[in-house]
Amino acid sequence: MKEIDKRALQEWEAFRDNIRRETPTELLSDAELVRKRAYLEAHPVEWMQYFFPNYASCDFAPFQTAAIGRIVRNDEWFEVWSWARELAKSTVAMMLELFLMLTGRKHYLLMVSATQDAAVRLLAPYRANLEANQRIKQFYGEQPSPTKWEEDHFVTKGGLSFLAVGFGNAPRGTRNEAIRPDIIDIDDYDTDKDCRNPVTLEKKTEFIERAVIPTRSVNKATLILAKGNLIAKDTVIGRLGKKADKHSVVNIVDKDGNSSWPQKNTLEHIERIKATISSGAFQAEYMNNPIQEGKIFKNLPLGKMPPMRSFKFLVCYGDPSTSNKGKAGSSTKAVCLVGRAGTTYYVLKAFVDHCTNATFIDWYYQMQEWVAGRVPVFYLIENNSLQDPFYEQVFLPLIREENARRGDSLFITGDARPKTDKAARIEANLEPIDRNGAWLFNEDEADNPHMVELLDQFKLFEPTMPYPADGPDCLEGAIAELKRRLQLEVYHVDVFTRGDLIDRDSRM
Image (cartoon, rainbow, N blue to C red; front, side, top):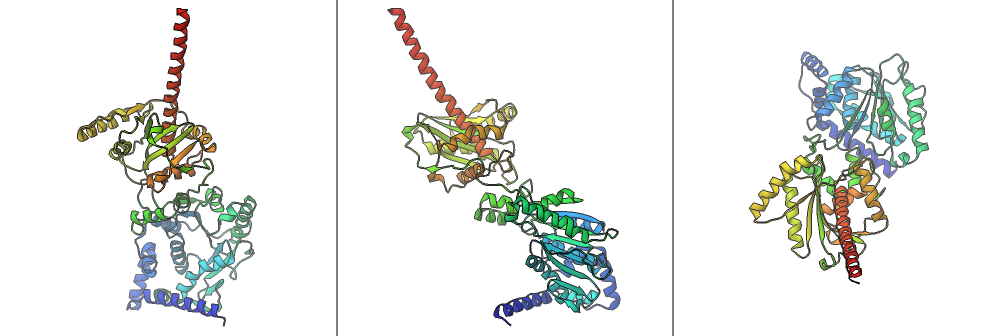
């Protein structure tokens, strides 16, 4: 035996030994065993927790129990799970499918994946549990068959069949004696490379529709369960979701900023993941939101800021949201400090985050302290017709209270400029500036999480705005105000000069 095979065998034995240790049996009489089995089979979630304590170590999340309930209630069913990483879609599927098979509801599982090796890997925990799970053995008897027990195709003593198939293999006519697959599990089927190639994507979709699904019996109830994240704009899993009875899309964080499975993934855990990968990667892997970085704004140059005396004035512009939550699922708020020297716009400092209204107002005072009177600053807050009541009723009282508390006189003017479509306005007004290298972002702020978020929002900006764009919206408002005020200065000079000429001519 080769050394690599020896290691693989040792790892397999260790895997099985661990399952053995974690599934200790109880001393039950035959009658007690029958009663307990009947109870557990009537309660699928408890069945899974009992037979797989090593996998079901955390309580199930509501979205998981709901999915289990749908499938248990419907023998004929097509469901797609686009559950984010760390939400246990493959593990829950294994426990559920073994429940259906060991209790006699289903008999033949076809596991389909991107490659044959991947399909074999996905079937390995099924085989290991059928070999080593002591509770399965106690309640349902010895499972391994002496005649057909290979890693890619194994059949239990009771006739339950499991077959692994990779993309491009030939599953047509697949059957275990007279039984055709009544569970078709499609897992880990999309790859980044394949999703970038429309021809490959079409071939992989065609393989599922023409070669895989038709292995089922027309007149026998079948479960088709496809699992995978939406890793690109167009995926096989997304196409299957449009045809399924149910497409369950669950992100690691819900729309309110809460963990979708808090029993396992705390917000602290999630924030740690976010801090270690790019925003684009986090959106694709954990939020089912694939975004191509640098699609619109491709430069976003960092650089040194000129001395403050280079600016006639600065604009500090804020883009509020009506949410008063500091959670990740709420809208972001933004405040940007911008100046122009020559033909270049300089983004000196920015705050972009999920925050409360009080924190948003505090950012203005932090900007004031940072400038420290070195140059005049115009402070503005977006206040279009939709926001006006909110500005008057919420932000102005907060500003008055904060001024009184600080003994300050900071005044923030509402910007009532009518605004067109947000995405179109951002792209039309800011993309040419980026394309021509006519702006710089303060390199001294490059590691500031707020500046990082602002740049991420630009990198991930698309016209459909799949990622927050409140930072770019804020910066667009600041630059528009800078342009307006600089044009006013030029206009006043022109009028003054023309007036001088008129006075001079009248005296002649």
